[in-house]
Amino acid sequence: MNLADIADKTVSLAEKSGATQAEVYAVHVKIASVYIDDDIPKIGSSMIESGIGLKYIIGKRIGFTSSTLAQERPADVVERAKSLANSSSEDSKFVSLPDPKKVSGSPDKFHDKETASADSELLMEKAMEVVKAAASSNVSVPNGSLRTSSIRYHINNSLGVNTGSKGTLIFGFFTAKSQDTGGVGEGVQRCWSREIGTIDFGKLGEKLQSQALSVLKAKAFKEKWDDAVAILTPSEGAEMIYDLVASAVSGENVNKRSSPWADKMGEKVASDVLTIHDNGLSEKGLLSSVVDDEGVPTQNTTILEKGVLQSYLFDSYNANQLELPSTGNGIRRAPRELAGRFSMTPSCAGTTMEIKPGSKSVEDLIGEIKRGVYIEHFAYPLVDPMTGAFSNEVRNARIIENGELGDPIKYALWIGNLFDSIKGDMQIANNLEVHDKKIVPSIAFPNTELVGQ
Image (cartoon, rainbow, N blue to C red; front, side):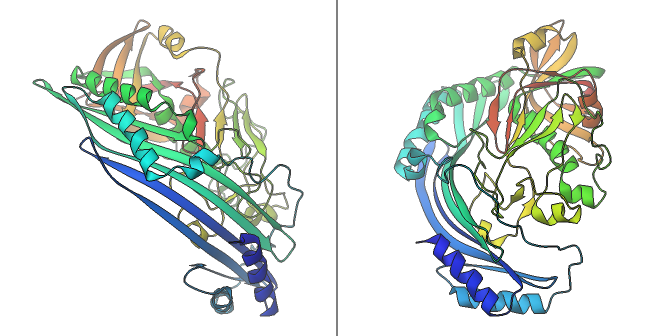
């Protein structure tokens, strides 16, 4: 299936039917997955999907529709998009689709053949490596999943954009349950990569078992510390700091005046130790590609440099409103699920958030903390991106006292304000890990509370 030909044909049909501008996103996705249920592998599944999304523009009226290529002809999609555009109100903020730009690098640059060819049988083998390494007399793996995806897409618009890219990724999620006469414990581990060969599945299972067993020893935390330093593992810290920063630098939120950093370009908004990039060309990034989902070349954008705000992120729609160039952040794809992406219009979103690592190990950070907590897992890591406030239930953690790890704890809340914490004496470790759209290390957040029962 030649996606470039399909995209070109659909744009041509749209122009002939009266569109002043048109944009087609044509995509082909292959997904393979397996599931674990009470230590037992279930039959894997596979899916292949091809579809197009068409943006049909008449002046400032925009119609968008989509279809799988198996369901409809491009001509039918064009007629429906035209009807939607004719019945739509004008979008006064729309300026234009993006103009073509020179693209550097091969479309295959971020595509791994081994991952793309992985079938359910191979994934079953890898998933069972996790289960066998995690299982013991009192530890089981009640559920888990392992999924690979490969994607190729092509963007064509009536201004001359004619480009595309390819990519692969693998995602795994496993839970462990430990049990003895003293109670029940839980472990949770995830793995992310563009290349299946980079993941040590046996080590992942060992970490899962260790985490679950440590919770069996956990004691209820009954104190209240209002000056705790919290070290978050990459998986938990990644979610919180991404939600905060990605929202604050979103060009859409800047245009709406809903970003707390809307008027702070060039100002210091965080600690000197915090440098963050949005890197659409990241070697390890799951959404890395030579172009974004509008056909704009991706780039490595410095968001924060030693705590100073350097740039916002823009897709073409929001960049045009400020007469600025797009930063290559028109995104439809999501690492966790690539299926159905053709049915969405591009939105202003991050590609891969990279936090510059520090020079110290996690053990070094722990050794410098008088009183704090080392958090491996929350019920769910949440933060209010507007205010920075958070109150998260701790599921797996250990106390830090006088530079040493103490007992595991349970039944505690971690409370604070992330905007305040990143301005304080935060510390960053050197243990970079990939988690979803983030490549981050462990981070120590100051000025927080730990509240027990």
